[in-house]
Amino acid sequence: MNRITHWIDGKRTKPGKGPAGPVYNPATGKQASEVEFASVAVVDQAVASALKAFPAWRATSLSRRAEIMFKFRELLNARKADVAAHLTAEHGKVPSDALGELARGIENVEFACGAPNLLKGGFSEQAAGGVDVYSIRQPLGVVAGITPFNFPAMVPLWMLSNAIVCGNAFVLKPSEKDPSAAMLLAELLAEAGLPAGIFTVVNGDRTAVDRLIEHPDVMALSFVGSTPIAKSIYERGTAKGKRVQALGGAKNHMVVLPDADIGMAADAVVGAAYGSAGERCMAISVVAAVGKAADPLVAAVKERIAKLKVGPGSDPQSEMGPLITREHRDKVASYLESGPKEGATLVVDGRKDKASQNGGFFLGPSLLDHLKPTMAAYKDEIFGPILGIVRVDTYEEAVKLVNSNPFANGVAIFTRDGGAARRFQFDIQVGMVGINVPIPVPVSYYSFGGWKASLFGDLHMYGPDGIQFYTRAKVVTSRWPDPATSKVDLGFPQNR
Image 1 (cartoon, rainbow, N blue to C red):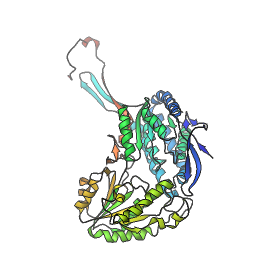
Image 2: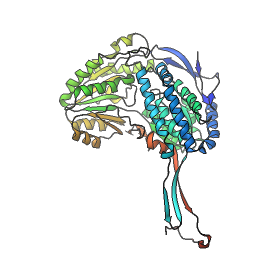
Image 3: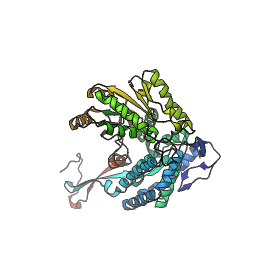
Image 4: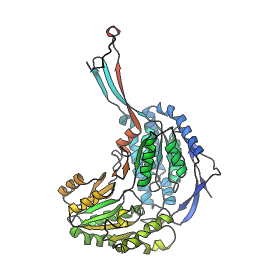
């Protein structure tokens, strides 16, 4: 059995004899390899390596740091098929989805290539007589990222690109379910010229996470995952004096107004609900269909579901792959039992999809109509290929539904009315809003993050907020006076 280890001091570690976890091929349901779980000692070794490498990296010029990120970008583009293959093999993404994930990750590397401009400070000449004041941003030191299984390449690239180019040493703890993409990223960074110790990968379970939270030399933590864990990491990390940004769960809605192009809305919601088998934090899981939009929308979605091809990534015709584990597949499928028992209408049952009968962790796209906010299929973050339709009578009722939800990650509205769209973006209490755009993931030069229970921390991820998160500001007040004017003054400093 192939054993995936760690990346410390610029190289893969030798396999140990400690605990390990299985890594499956979700399309076959069979174990493909095992991943070594880092002990506290291994995490300490990784952080020590990063801490040792940090001073020289911090002193490296911005132009050199940007040059390495440019080379990393070129290597990612040259090896994108290899990275995507890991995503297909361990997560189950079909190739088009895997390549799309990587493309969005590379955008963040491109943003980081602008570090010489992004890290410019401000300068005020002659703020007072003979006094200049200027600001600079400096790296934190050793920082860590804990990333989820659903985006094994993109989310690490969200974090590491800005962290490294700002002058920090970055320790990544990827999901133990699909760790190989992170190891390939480490190889490509080393090939790009990144010094050993500046990017480290520790694979593992809760032991590794807990040690990163507790370690006194880890200055900041970035996390993406479920809300209960995000809240816990934020509280524990900040209690230790660390800077923490923790992205939690989501229950993303799409509001469809009666004037919307129903065909366009149906195309959009099918792609947003069932892409990557619904295992996206920005997936649309609920449609609030307003008034007369409901019946034609349900019919159009059902028609499109019937044409979707579910299957393994090895089949070039597959549009949707399996879920990550058998346990998760079974949990998602359980809502197809509980929904109808609570009064919802099961329009499409994904358990009957042909792929669901042929091994692997497949569940076909499913559709629940007449969903109510009191039902488990509405309240829970299902994180799978089940779309729910909530029927509402008015725009106001739709907005109230969205704003009442404890999650506030993403939302979309489909309408031809510009006034309604503008009112929606003003009224809605959600961090990322799409207007006739179903998955409003910001481009890399904005920042990603929701509100309420979808984000713990003050700063969103990547983009300008990412630069701010991975640096701290310093203000310098400077004077080079004529010695003849020097005198003792016990008064509080004033601008004169």
